[in-house]
Image 1: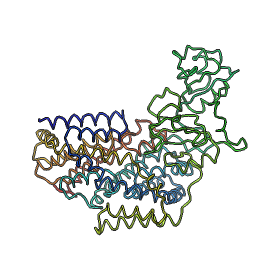
Image 2: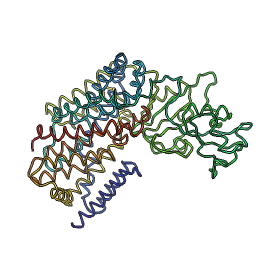
Image 3: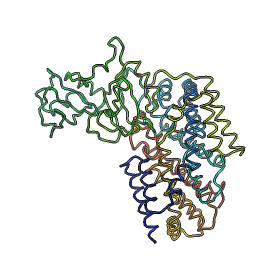
Image 4: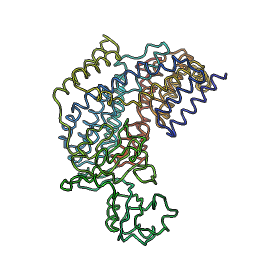
Length: 587
């Protein structure tokens, strides 16, 4: 092993570690990888920057804009209204998955889940069905629908781009479709069964007057004459309040040691975690208050105030910054009463915690302020009551432009990147989208991730690292067994996708898959298809794919729910891939 291979593997190991541990945002990790391979001389400056001009990167950005045009026109909300008219739960689930799978073949699946999520919660309540029976199927269907076309997921485009960089022909727009439909059919049938026997039932969807599900962290102020004064932390809570736990006591800005033994004084701030009903019961019994400052956020006393649950959306500009840094309350004219982050113990005041995708904020605001949140692309209202109407003109033009883009590319009149860019220009020129809406529709973190990790794949090829790994694996697999090699490539990609970004796992495994095929003297296409499909379908954890993270909190799921439902589906897809990929893409 020469020095170039060793350095490449060190960068690769560091990237995998940072992607898995999430110590840094994925886009920052990608830029760190780009800088490392360039500084170490593993790629030329032109190769290092090629990710920004890659057909995959540009096409993904263009498809984000085209998806935004359809989403903002109200077309998906119109489909959600039709969905809400179905009264049989099994038919509701079937049509929901069919809608999600069909639309995600052409529209960004994160956008689909973002729009459908509050609609499904409301529609599930109308059918008397628990949202927890519907939201995992929504997420999974949006994933396996995306594998049906080249533009259905950024992963397919990324694998296509890696192939072209190696001088291979890549894939046509509908080359994945026949194989993808098998996965859609099998996944839909499985989820119809899993919905009944494996998915948890957390009760019928609540309306805005009901309690809020999940466990929130909140900060409560101890005013003068509160019954909590003079009591120790262990005496204050638990009362006869059920699920409410005192985490910390803050005094004059400092956290007290041993809060359970400390005596509560006026002016203290109590950090409490628990179910919202229990927190409210404790707050009223002890006459505690929420943040007593900034009275101007209370608005007009004559206006009714509402509680709403607001989720931080994928790609949100709010992620990574705290409520205090964002001046969130003053910006949106509301108060944040609680923060919910499943799977992680928060021991700071909610306004100091850096926000993450999937966090749910419990906000108290006027109806006017909550209505204003609906136009904010960085958040989703989980208890949305008023739906966006369908703008007929924008809906017709956005759908017509999307169809035109797909047809022009499918008929090979021009490349998908060319037709997609022209479609974006048409959306803005015809005033379907404003310029700022077009820019706002792009998830720039995904773009930076794609641009940053592509040079690592080039470094693996240039240094010979991909060939070295392929040689090493073939010692165990055997050069005469491409089917076993295909199974290993699919399994490796699938496991990595459960632990890190799907795009990162694809770009790391794709060069190895190509090198393996070349050493075995067989066509590389089946191996690349295995990478694309495995990286685009992550079911066993709520962190492997953004749509899983989105429904994790909204459905009140536990981490184990995804493993219980998703692992059998991963196994089914693995077996199908090994059997079907060689039939449609022979060695």
